[in-house]
Image (cartoon, rainbow, N blue to C red; front, top):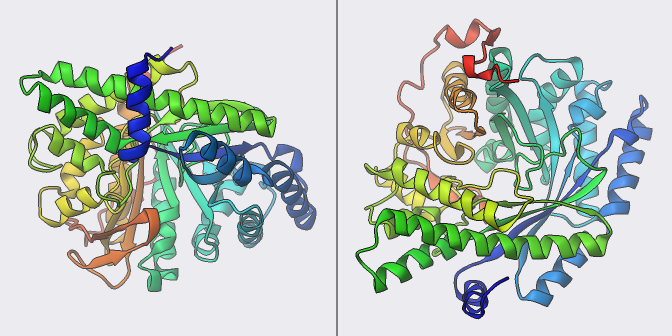
Length: 457
């Protein structure tokens, strides 16, 4: 139970510190919609999604208004299309994406995730159809999000899939060149993808999960920053261990708020509650930034020496606070460091404090990885695949989730400005050294074997 002062501090988080429920995501199992007839399949998925989601937005708004806590995004995640639509061609997969986009508009949700494939050990026909369809599917829709898992600690890295994804990303960027490659902002390449993640663009409903489930994603970087600053103002001699404890306690409060909202939404919709994912996901708003937490910790900017250690402490404290608050913590539950979505991080990159090499190093200790990173549009497929492979290796070897959401912006070079709008934010394109190479390494294909510590039983 909360003490009186804890309740008061939580109210203060809502009023003044940008605390919100970033996303309520309805996960839906579509395996009972399978049909070899495309029209019947589309009809089946429309009926199931609309029946379950028609009241999602209204209920989220009602519960949010009741507690005075905004639910910013209402989303849907579905079973991987590569599995439930395995019999369809790439052209038909594009039609399915367009249908999903239309369904999302009908029920008025922000995004629908699950145009996905799991190919860490090999690419089946349905997987190949999805990968081939990705550029067209994402360029012809606005609300469909996609993810492809190309590596796990158990399986290793599927380098054929890595190269295929690099080609798909380049093509998706070209098809949306007038929007600075916006289609790529809806596509994640993963290592060790979680199956219960409410955050886009990677959300999908895993096999083995209930037929319908409510997952909630809470975010509170502004809350964490304010808590650190407030305590340091009163006790400037606090140690890093003390500060970690402050972050942990703050994360605990935020997680409880998220679970409260998620469970009430689930109850009103008569759907099982799944997990609460406390991931510190920033917005482009000042005061709602991961980067500002680093400054509160005494660093000049994110990216300077000490940043990786600070991020490791932050990520660990957030996970511990979430685990204490709830028995149903899932997804990623850590700290995101997306470049364009965080104004402070974007500025750090622009001023030279944060390079793509340092960003990659920091992904060893954070949630996700190279997230919302705009890069020069003339990067070669081989160099792009190499960056993806490096990030997948970090996840594989460290038994953690890593991902890339890279945006090669057509016709633009390092230092040019890009604007994606909304939560996707804006940034200057980051320099990628040696981006013009055509090295053979990624073309050998096959599978990089799993590390020795994968043999757990």
